[in-house]
Length: 298
Image 1 (tube, rainbow, N blue to C red):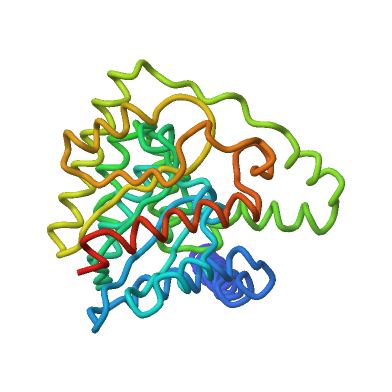
Image 2: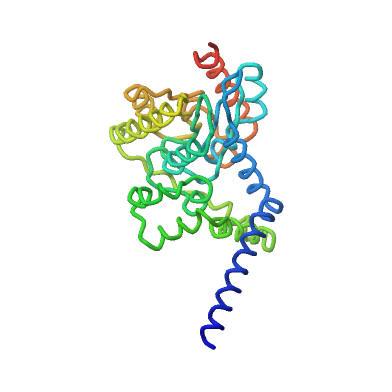
């Protein structure tokens, strides 16, 4: 009797979990504009194939999402190259190193990959976590990721579960979505909390770490027939000079359309992300760099 009830309980639990996962995959992108964009951009990135013009895959975090005017960039390169973007907020270097491994493994064939973020995001060893496990990490790479960031078994098992389940991977995003809808005043207060100043190590340490990581990204892309470039997002603080030197030492293109500390704070929405005016300025300069590069102008 106990065995029968145990089996029935497990079956009901499995059906419930499957129903929740199915509803999440169907409904999440319908109620959340952020999830809808990420899902659509992910599909577009996976669908990239060789064509008559080179395709540039632009990846990164919110600095790229808000800093690059996507329609303006596509129009500027029309007739010369296709541009496909795939940003995910709160991602950093490790998210995209393993994310590019997965995109290439699943058939994406860009001619050029451009990673846009800050110098601090390039040298840090943090990940977004469970959400990246769903969209960016291969199951086979999770043991190495666990070693890279020193996750314990509980957090590692969460990455494995998130690789298969959007509900589990996106539970924080769902919670935030519900919070915004049910208590917008409290959610707005949380969003206005200013992040603390980023801590930068000495220039030599930045240079050494950046050189290693830029080399790894360049080799990864090259092994799949793609050129790689790092796009430094505008902002404030140090990091530009050692990053540029790391690019020289690693043989990697480091694009700096606008130097750090060159734009006034009136060009930023929150002191960190560009506003519409700043994004147009940055995008115009970035487009010119691409149009005049040997890769596009060939």
